[in-house]
Length: 136
Length: 136
Length: 136
Length: 136
Image 1 (cartoon, each protein chain N blue to C red):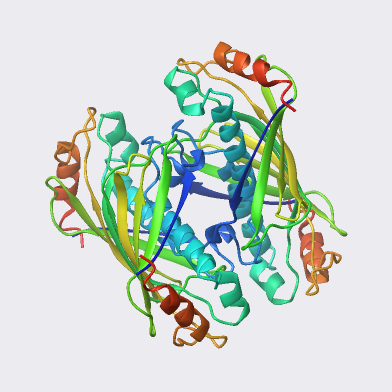
Image 2 (image 1 turned 45 degrees about the horizontal axis):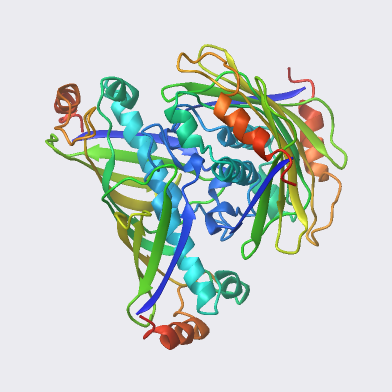
């Protein structure tokens, strides 16, 4: 499994008038962890885009367990279980500082070439993922 | 079915460097349509909260079909197919001005009382929904 | 003066745990009104960008008078008092449905050409503004 | 001067279709640094709010010098030069990893008591600020 996690404090603007992190922000937290994972395995998103491939989202699923709040420091993980072909599937979890699961989800990513047409996952990203598949 | 739709232009800040609406924003578009639906059936979210019940999100699923872009005017729908008990399930679609489906999804909502404990859907909301179940 | 205003309901995700619209969102409301103004005078931002000129922000000032809240329908105005040269200055006001001023501000915009270098305001935008300078 | 800075990577969703961080997000970066400063001096915002005082924004000014981009790690500073009375004034700077100034600004904060009326800066916050005024 390729695994990466990153931690950061909840930001005030991410809260809503329920006094908790607005549900849409966990989808953004997921993305933070995915992009840090890409950086960590040596193929950051901005390099991927510079090489002509963009990575649009195909599908998101998100289950909310426990709200994150102002004052919390969340840890967000991204894990990839198998080498991607046309699609890349990422498992994601957001935990608070007590290790409590706030949100769990899955994100499926596609790949578009310069023409805007679907392409296979770029070779350098496949390789970077495969090199780290036994990390944890 | 209780059905409501609302239309608005894509906002510039909602785009990302792929040149399309960032995927997290459709989750927010969904919420706009749900809240307009609640207003339309006579029980707006702020009244619900003033009466002591908050409506946290339990689950979101979202399938991305076609990107919305700056210049688009999107129409976002929310539909409720059956009367809620402990949970309320809402079907959601975002279309562009050509009628093309951009994103489809489902959102499941829960209800919390003043104590922060799960409660049943408040009676006025159940009634408001039931009165409109044959709308369309 | 070139004047345009646009109205929309406050969105739930725009509120924060103080129970009011987060201060950063008025800056975004300002942009909505500016972009609607550009559309109204016949030169929408996406056409401007397609023609190779981007419009980065140079300066923003914002004075907060009265909070907007969930349930409010805000009216956001953008007004241009003189024809732009290298910079375009826009006056902005956000009012609630009672006509009460929530926020006032000024935004100064610059223009960048394809090379990323500052350029003068594109001729079609100057013309569109000048044609509407006596609108109100 | 009370000084604090915090660093974090630019998030993808913060970029817009110009390919740079959307201007509204620097206002949010400012807030991150202010809230980290409050935590650092021992009086976090959530404690302040729990004690019945909220801190709405009165005024923001922001000058944009150089865009932050995806891949950048920004450092955001907040500095307070004098002890607050009814208002608290904070100087803010966002720099990129090369030390280049992206944005500079000032934020003025007010204080509201439980009744929603303006109050003086809470005593514990005044003390916390005064204890750190010679920090740097």
